[in-house]
Length: 121
Image (tube, rainbow, N blue to C red; front, side):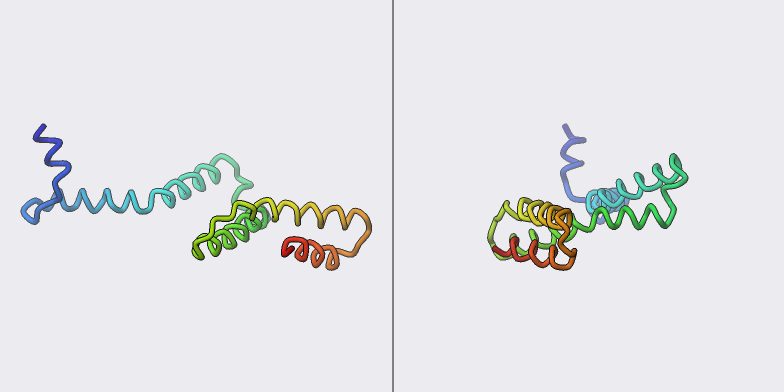
């Protein structure tokens, strides 16, 4: 019981070991996703030698760009106190519309403008 109370109590200046442990725990909690990302990056680099090629890294950035763009849009929506779950659906609709229009022979700049306009509607 005393051990549990000591763990819950804030570190005192008289106990520098407890303060250092608390700082380490705070750093681990604050940056846990970064540590996991770095660990996955290292494991992928070791297990697949082609992972660290510039072509693969460019491909990873290109594949995640759509998610990043949608995340920026969702951030703006959430910051303005609105919750809108249709952002992902509109992004999917716009992407499919571009693919269909290009498949029909329409030039890609025109297809992109039409998809953006459909998203605005």
